[in-house]
Amino acid sequence: MVVAKEHFVLVHGEGHGAWCWFKLRWLLESSGYRVTCIDLAGGGVDPTDPNSVRSFEHYDKPLLDLISTMPEGEKVILVGHGAGGLSLIHAMHQFVDRIRQAIFVAATMLPFGLQTDEDKKDGLPTLPENEIELTFSAGVDDPPTTAALRPEFQRDRLSQQSPEEESVLASMLMRPWPVAAISTASFEGDDERLNRIKRVFIKTERDHMLDPQQQDSMIKKWPPSEVLELDTDHSPFFSAPEQLFNLIVKSL
Image (cartoon, rainbow, N blue to C red; front, top):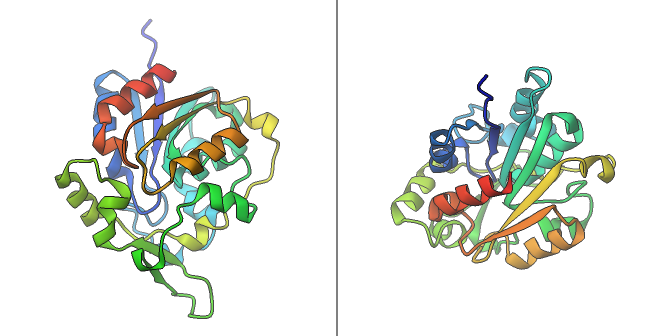
């Protein structure tokens, strides 16, 4: 009897979509793994207007729906990038018995999400006002509904070591992210329960988006099973896909 290899579910970060994983997906599938790349609400080709996504439950619904409809007994390996780490944590709280492993690629790794200002300081990028464009679709007196990196800052923040053509592709495909929804990513639960799931953190040493010191702080506060390192920018799926693939497979 042939045993099927693991099922990877790849979860994008802020502003991105399933498209960002195309190289890693090809490498994994070429090695016989099953791969699902999802678009969170308002990301990638999902038709939702990100300005209408006001809760993290709404934002995360595509991931939660996928896991909830899996066949009984099937487990997945979640891989998250950037703010996609919050989606991994959300899923871990709800489906601890359906997740074999969670891999955080320069991703927000906080056991209960963004409950405090210190959590936000550790887990979210700190960007100068001149580098981001905010939309206030709920009204100027309310918090912004979406945020987007201005095009002239995208390469330096996200992919300064990546091939330039991939930075251009990303600039064409990126969308504003639902900052109002992401800021509400706060979860109740038991970290002992979460610790039943193996966690691996892949640190990006030349990251201009989620500073290596922020990554170190999250690692120190909630140590994962393993910490692996890449000497790359924030987007190793572009700048070092083979290295990223090798670390992921090594961590299994």
